[in-house]
Length: 481
Image (cartoon, rainbow, N blue to C red; front, side):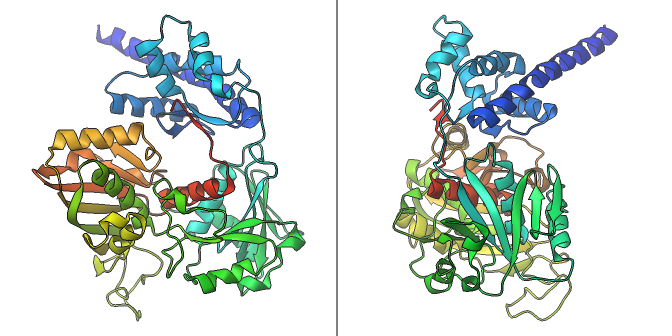
């Protein structure tokens, strides 16, 4: 009997692998030919390997408490390939579950045709012209932004990364920049092929030519000489944070709007993608994407405040060390940050609690905050200690956040885990702004404590790209709604 079980398990696995292999070319064609992003409960299947497709289905099973197999989603995907679809994000996991629950006796092909009728209108361009993007700075966030933008280039009709502006470091600067994009000690190797074009002083990444432009000041670059027009520039240096400093970029020919990847000062709008997108208006040219911590805590705070109300609270972050700290003890202008980052926990300040009020005005004055830098290179943890206006319990609060993560306007920002074994390294590469650790939730009447993980590098970079997509008008409709 045990030998038979061994055989059965292996045969079942091989069958699942075969289905996933059949799905790969369908997902690729839909993406390249129609700009269709295929997902399973928010997990993109584009550019995935066979095992990644199976793991995405496994994730859905854990969340749904039901089996979701590639055997079930394959017919849905196959039916999609027989339609002439306009660009969209299509969740085959949700479509499959909907079909299983209420297929109305229809064949799967007819069900899919009816569900996708609104976009079964033929292939259409997303933009009249691709939106040019320029990175000012090519450090940790800059290179991750480059990876994400390259990954999303698709047929080349959407966002187009054209250049990165840096200070020249050495005679082999171009080769070193390409190497740093190719290899990353935290996030792993680049998924694709990178070469250099020394004549154009450019990095070629999966067919995308990214010029490396050397400059010491924003206004010293004429982007139009490189064919760059009406570009969105992402300043990831953090050197300038107010309107006057960031406005120097607008003076450069070829740049029309600027995003700062740090909290903005003064009247610079601080945007957390998915929460206060209404601040992104055509008349405004300078924006801030706020901080990684603000992006992590605001979606959860908004969700909790909308349902239960927040009287007051305290936010404590255990934040991975950053390049601002010293590797070994040395002078630093800020208190404690001069002490060795890989060897110490370091109490420091965070402006995230105050920044929340800029995004959710009704929480103004209700939150305090502090931070501890910890000896890990990436992934942080926010602890939200809240007094609620309405009493709750663990089950109801977790159930609410789980539903928000699965099917709501905040599903791209809030993820959810119910694993008893997860630790910080498990969230490296998370594309969400945050992940609610449901098994750590504490609720006593109106008092609750939530533990929220976030990849302070990659998750934040994904939020920045979502903001860019909103500004450029390349947000794809999500189906099913």
